[in-house]
Image (cartoon, rainbow, N blue to C red; front, top):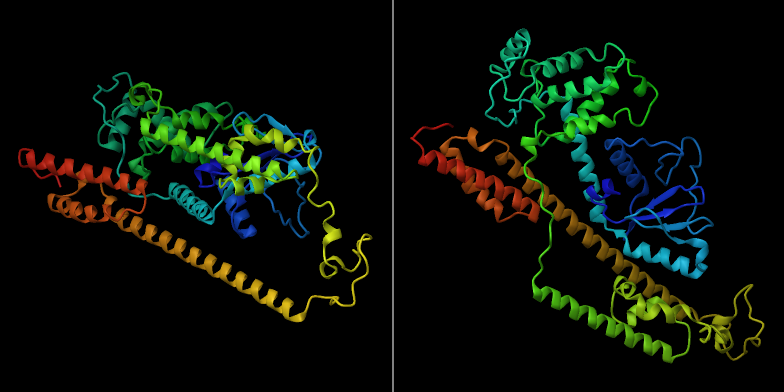
Length: 493
């Protein structure tokens, strides 16, 4: 669920499919989505995040299968079906504990409340493209500057002289905090792979250290702080391709064979971890709190008044009628179930609204082929047996006009969303051209020029995240310009 949330699909519904304990994670959308395209994107997302998609383990539906009609999916609300708590992953509601009507109502509520938008689907595609690009760049040899944080620490005199001399010749100086022995072993492992049994753990540590600092002699860029995810991918690819059959755990496909890769890639020394993060305690203005309380009080009052109105009619009522009469959303209605749930479940004193309905219907709508009611009389000769052609044609015209209007509104919305996405991508591409170079690599003239141009783009930032990122880069430019102007007059550009 975290993988889907990071990719833009923040809403999903989790269920137990049957008594066997299998889970079904449903993704709903508020408008039609091409199922084949969605399936390809979901498989791509799971594969890029190192999930193994296999029958009986992890499957994505709809599944057309190979040279067949496809694989079947167990439908919801059958015996053994259950609602699961997303936080604790424990069973919340058992299907057999509620009536069929209530179970269907709960499932349909999730279809509306947990629906993702078409724009969320576009975010998923962009997220997959970005992940795929980042992973493909690991196999290339880009000319990127090293991102190693220099620390003042004297070199370790106990390092083997031959390794120290070799590392110094590669980097032109001994990088701070580099463990020469580990870096050199990591280089050998990266070149030749595993050469014997029981080398997997040592190879993970040494190759991770090697990738952290990179290797200028081979054109291998450093994957230091901030590139933990890329370093993890590179480690996994290295072990999968170059374990040379020497690791028994990898040969046996044990799930914990590569568990150490994530820990090694994301490990940081004490001096790089910083201070312990303080627990965040949200502070909200008192005016916000009072406004929320007033809204909640107003909503509860409207729900109570709507409930009293429906109770006075002495008949069944639905939650749709209740939330429409109370002028609130379904989510708000279910947040205040303590008001209406007991009355809604206790229906023994209410009459069914359908009682006597067919007795009072006219013959025009009551008679149908194979569905004649035994309570009605034969159709009267004075009344037409079928709907007049003019009335039927008028209804068809009205229905067609409504459908055309709905399609026009949907096309307009999609066009607006596509235009907005294109504008965001154009803005990001233009800004990326100016922010690719580090501020300390620019001359004074370029610093001034970049500041003027980027300040204009800052006012046109499409999202808050883009605005904050560009603001941070502009701050670095200003600090670099102030440092040079206030220095001894040297130009480092």
